[in-house]
Image (cartoon, rainbow, N blue to C red; front, side, top):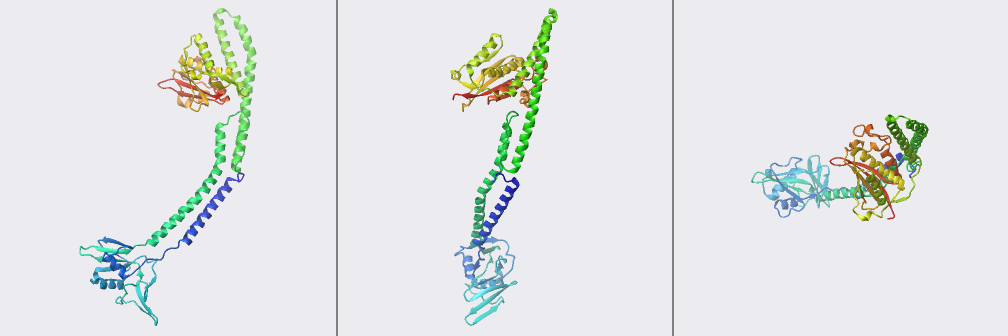
Length: 457
């Protein structure tokens, strides 16, 4: 089924859902037929008027009499039984759509047009009458009607039969439709999950994919998803090839520049002392830029060497080297529980990643403070490097970790740098399965968080 197209799966799901819904609805209607209309007698209405028994009737007071199809024979029978004037009673037919004819013992009624026919039957035959003076037996079952009695206070007392059979029928229909919904919800949910799971998997892989490595998108699932995954793999190969060509071009250029730089350094030694130090400084800066480019190229072309490193001794060594040079770099080392923590990564690479961030902090803020933190799951170790500089605008926090990226406002070219420091740090940290996160501090400053996977848990 996974190789079937999304169109086919959705079509089959829709057809099956409609078929099941119609089948259940049809079965509900067949198994729960519409109940027959309610039937009442003159005696029932008289009992309700006298308030002896009101079960099965709805008793209400209204300012006006009913307005509908009047049944004069029933009005006459009720006025005689109640011994009241005929103008104080009014009877109107209810629910003409469900009312036709009803039968009682020895006497029946039949609605013809707007006239109520009375049929008296016995063993010899039957007779039909429909004049309003024809008597109706007190126990003859009659079509449902509303009877209104004019009260002494000017209001009308309405009595009409309730229809519990119809109410029960409606409840049964609702229960049947609810059952259909319950029976359909499970298969529909499962089918929807089968349809969306390959797309969600593709999205997850796309968020985690990098430009390096093999084709990351699995060609599985429906045909449309397979076509998208195939196209994305082709796009990945194309982008990866372009990136490799760019890195190769930079590497070749950097290698080619080493030779003339060596010549420039030798010639700079022969310059008179007045300009010599500036020339040598420029050559050193160019050499540093070339080394940064080569380092970035090597990280882009080589797989990470998964070694392990005790992190606290390394941090102490880094801090000591900067403090020996008089640099204001601080490390809060108050808890001995971190002393034996080992993280995944090569010592030289981790040291370079940390020092790149410290150099940035010193260059743009003048100081740096390091702290370490271990989340509750103990799977990662976080190294926070804080500074009190101007920070970075929120919309550029992710942007500055890209290669050759420099901010031209507070972090301009007069401060030096190649725009590769944070890019190299990010490449090192992510290469070891970690993460680099930059956040602004309040009221000012920047925090760089390097997360490394722990080993030996």
